[in-house]
Image (cartoon, rainbow, N blue to C red):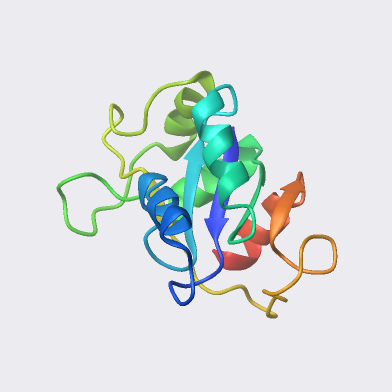
Length: 141
């Protein structure tokens, strides 16, 4: 699974990039979504917005921490998710988050220690992080 985090805001974005970010459910800054890496349409959308987001492969430990800290149920305002380990294994197996009753996006804090939002990885935070996205997510929880 791929974790994608929106880094840039709405100012001076092309309408095509804005539309793609909305379709990926990244409507605000520092919003994280979990995407299927086997879906070619999703990979094309990531390629379109690679200059506005940070993305990479998420591992199970980080996914459990993300669900435990930031996961919310659909319908219940602010309700935390029970059994994040079970939900994380089902998501990694390919289940849809809405079927599991979880909102398909996570609101994160700005990263502790700051980031360079203008440059691409490894000097900045934009683009493909591969396995290092887990470290960025842990800074933002």
